Image (cartoon, rainbow, N blue to C red; front, side, top):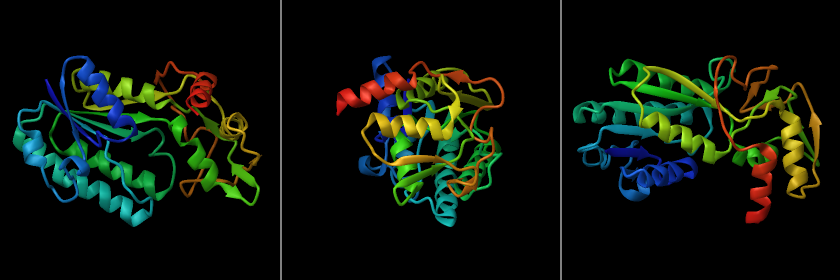
Length: 250
């Protein structure tokens, strides 16, 4: 089966492509650097030819509110008609747990993306994921105030990118849900505790401060804003194991 992976050269996309190829499928990594651009429309018709499934992992290069909304709306308005014309059987999109429960520009843009997918008429499955473990350094950096890192004590349940990719591949090879599947890491604890454990493991001397007023992507974090409220598929890689792998790779 031919599967087009939009964003197929990125962190999760490259892993998804590898999994699908290992399973014997034709997985096309579609990205601007491979000649497929969902913003300009370049290469979309050619990429879609003969494909049955599209996995949409494209992400905005900017987190500025207006830019990110324009990115996701433009991307879907080019991608979805190209899929419809090709008779696509399944559109799989990666989204974020809690986007309808937190008030920030990036999350609102993801809601707009989901709404375009739902209205397209193409069979779909939306995978809402908790934050990736791989993004903890970026989160710490963006939350640094002098020598302190101010992080909300709201609950957090990070998932390893390897587990995200495995779930995305599984969903893509299954029948469309025409609904949402949520995925999360196997452990749940206060956000500030995960960041503190990460910084300690990598030898970063910054002090993590539990701050209920600390923002996340510009939005306020309530106790359960960032974790699944109901059933979710849990990843297999625990945080300590992920940290060991990170240290070994370094």
